[in-house]
Amino acid sequence: MAYQNLRQRRCFSFCVCTIFSIWSIRNLLLGHATPQRTTSISATSIPCKIWQSLLDQPRPDGLGEAIESWISLNKGCSYSLIGNDEADDLIRKHYSGEVVQAVFDTKCPISRAELLRYMLLAAEGGIYSDLDTIALKPIKDWIPHDLKPATRVVIGLDDFQLGDRQSQGSSPPPPPNPKLFCQRAFAASKGHPLLMKAIEAVALALRASRPSDLHPCKDVKLFDGPGIWANVIMESLSSAIETNVSHWNVTGSRHPRLFGDILILPIHNLGLVNVTQQV
Image 1 (cartoon, rainbow, N blue to C red):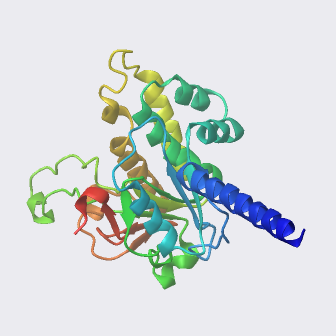
Image 2: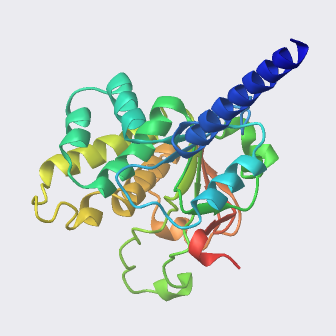
Image 3: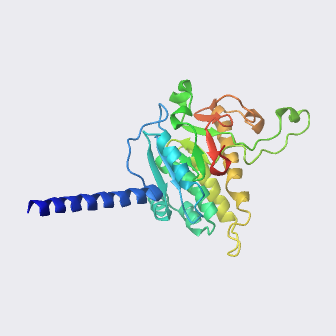
């Protein structure tokens, strides 16, 4: 009898462990990961919530390593990988009207993913990262200590920069580079005006430009993605300091600079690398 009870207890323990393991793996790959204590990356209102999304797109190589880099370097943060169902629920919960219509009308998964990154942080706050991006430094190290009390948005300069500032000379400056600001990872507080402007701008552009069913993503970068992101940031920086800010004011910056509550970091200060660029 005692032997039978022992076998039953072992069987029960095995079943519980198996169910927990399956639940944990599912949550890691899609949906909310195991809850963790959420802290803040600044002294204001940027919660340490890490968000990534996996919609109707191919899974990038090195997915597991990239996800693990964000979780292991940021032990005090929560982590969520959003799929199609979770994205739909979040959009319907926090948004309405033409913005929702623009999201569900678009047939291009790239456009949907681009818009979702802004909508996620506007609704919840935290840090967004593309799935193919590996973190090399903790998020808490993004913001210099003396700038933490005033920072509500963190944006890095991208690797794709304009030419040397010396090329400006007396000739007319070239147009701003649409890839001036890093879009694959950034941080913001919930409801920040910069994010709301980005959402409105992308939704407006999506409604105005309807790619065909045959080519649903044709010219997508003309009306969303880095181009609109750069324009919204430049407008927000100018508004924050009540002075016209051009790309020359930020290109080639070597030190973090705060424009109102928007922190612009030099290239590589976010500590990111694409899974295909590892050394």
